Length: 319
Image 1 (cartoon, rainbow, N blue to C red):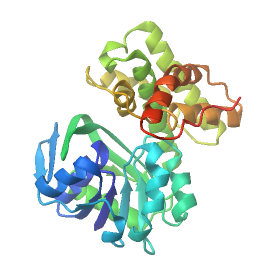
Image 2 (tube, rainbow, N blue to C red; image 1 turned 90 degrees about the vertical axis):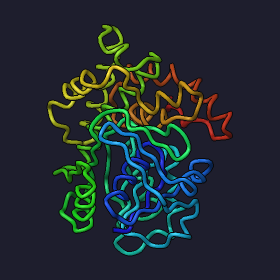
Image 3 (cartoon, rainbow, N blue to C red; image 1 turned 120 degrees about the vertical axis):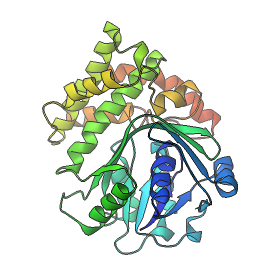
């Protein structure tokens, strides 16, 4: 398959690298020093599942140089999704699948507005990974998995071909019966984990057994589940208990990308994760006090980081 990976960070670099290692025709859309390193030295991935290197690597910052592809994997930061959507027109043809592997739930609707519903699938991934240097990705924990599917949950050839490509690459890939429910289940976990970990400022092992922090985390999970069900999402009954179980199974030093961004003074996905829960809660009449607290506690840092980067302020919450 011809696959464009839009964003070559911890997610895109790892999964795109595995696909390229398996012989798929992969091109990375990247920028800055990371792009320069990919072009000159290739891609180095250090992984708990086995280190590997890809060289040479096809990489560019201009989608027009690539042309139409079979699949676009969207792996930019959530706040960069609209920009990526506007830039990917040269990658599209009839049948091209655009698969967002984002931490939030708003990316599919954002992409649909830009490229059209006929291109956009639902998608998510699970991995702890990050850029550890230009051209260098570190996979630090969690078994990497990808999940995706058509939004009407019908079987499709393009989804099955992508699943098979991931399987050839040794990546656990699934097409669920209900992609919206799968996305919300992952969103519940990552938004709660990211927000509370960022407030606490410690890896998961430093707070998951501390009573007040654990109750805050549980409150975030329960509120997000209530919002999802109010929105008509058929979340499984064990969603919250499963999220707590995942927290307890994470490595002691596990962190979330939103947490790392905020702690290092970079713009983060706060608005697309915790903020999205709070906004959806207001839309559907569901109180979200735990998530509101997390958002309020982190908003000053996020606002400052965006101002330094010359980015617009966060959406904020309606009154």
